[in-house]
Image 1 (spheres, helix red, strand yellow):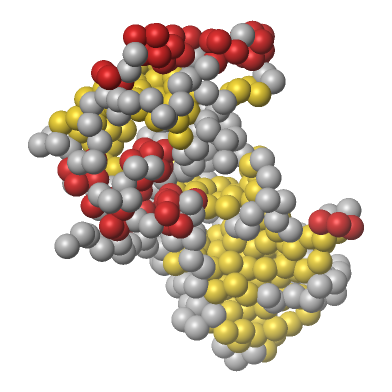
Image 2: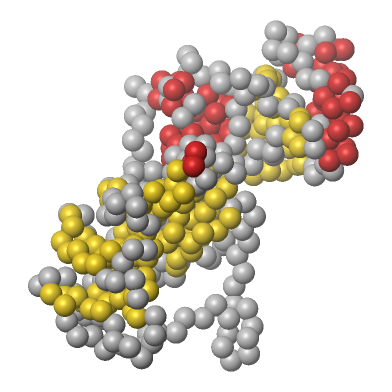
Length: 403
């Protein structure tokens, strides 16, 4: 693997569980460079670089350290906080990056055959410092959950690393039970044939049922206690794909394209068609309806949004879409705009595209309706999947502590 950063330990305070690290970018490409290492996942990987005979190595294997999903899910049990306290040479313009590439002496970072920093020959120490001063980098104060995780590190340690930042979960105290577990769906439903495409989905207002429908007019309802199919019907193509449950009743409706026309409605418990006249719904605003003021703006800079849903209590956004090379689902906190958890469904150009998502009104589930596409045939739709995520992340670490 390619070395991406050079790391140096500046201070260690075991009683305070605190370590100060300097991170320096050593990998550049035309017009770009490895990112700043603000995410806590980077530091767990870095601490693991030399932890084979240390307490951290006893509870985290090399395979786990190389597993992005494992690191993102478990970093919170090891890293309490990360604070960037200094930044160097950032941001660089494309031209400045290209100048660095042309001047190999400025990019150079010593190799690890050398001793600790305070024992380096003066010329090698000067080379290391010059690399730190001229390349993109930052200093960080990192607080760990237990001093054992950094007891193998001392001031003056330095090394090159292939570690990189991903997206570690960032939970507030007591928040875990409100966050969907995106990495472990409790069910992956396949309600339609390969010739049909998913459209919308909706939970009943008591959370007992989930209805999904397709482009071809197929309607399927699942029992949310077992995720087994309990009702199926088919409408002709003159009906649109919009779904709505009748409040307080196990009745699902499909709205007609022409508003005054009757809509289809089914009692999913009895399995029979019923009459259900159109009803007006509730209004929801993201601007102040009195004067048009925007009430909230949440920045999003790295994902092409396909679907966005607000949690029942209004505290979180579930966002799905495409980031480079993958389909992701993200949970974002409304109060401070922080991403709490995110997960890629599959790896690389995975043949899934998000159509829609839904939270259950009781807050127990998040469902994502996905289109399966044929990557090698022009991204043609080939059926769909519905992924069901339980709300609630672990409140205790799954990793054991050392003896």
